[in-house]
Image (cartoon, rainbow, N blue to C red; front, side):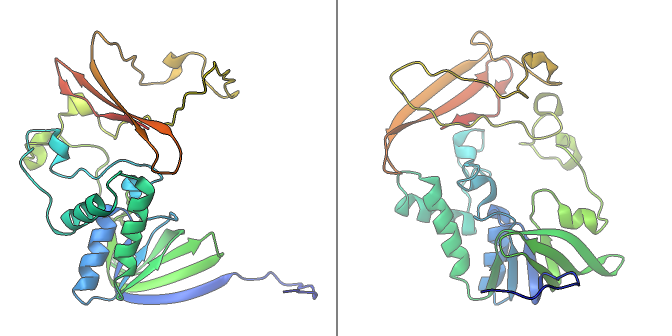
Length: 279
């Protein structure tokens, strides 16, 4: 294609109008379950995801496995089991992805969505604005796909904010809470104690390692902190304070040799802390 003529006016990017009965923003596990459930009930659904893959934190981009109420025996709810679509996804993944390759889980989740004829999937599309037909009703949302430089104007009867950041609810003016509430607010027996958990999510340490057979010099970037205490909330993990169990296993799911490391850290005085997964 060759465009030889010069345009004095500013060119506009392509804009596409879409409409459905149900619009889900966010392609994590929650958004997938909402979209697939609606589609299987005969509802025309649009699923908008701002990443190139589905799965959210469970995708190959983040690789935090699906927990739910069972927490993989990480709490006292060890005899519970997730049902419905979560169980369907976990069982399918166990059968087809025995090595636990996170990239294969990406393909399984994509297949679940693409197999539903009532779902229109928009990947790499970030929703940034809403339009309301009344003070408490959303009429449409606006998104932009950076891969094909296309604006989307999406109308719907019902909207589900599964974005993780609450962009639709926030832009629509909904009331919200930031951080983890205390147990007594909703009577949740398994909710974390505020003093132990804090108000927001913690951090996950995740990296790959391999044995090079020789020392490797590391040159830190210029922005790296020389004093870790400059971070407002920091803590040094000490073996005397925590019991650290390390499980190492060789894997060649991607065609090469490597080591996957899982660290589970618990405090004898406070119970289990959030796990750190290193791979």
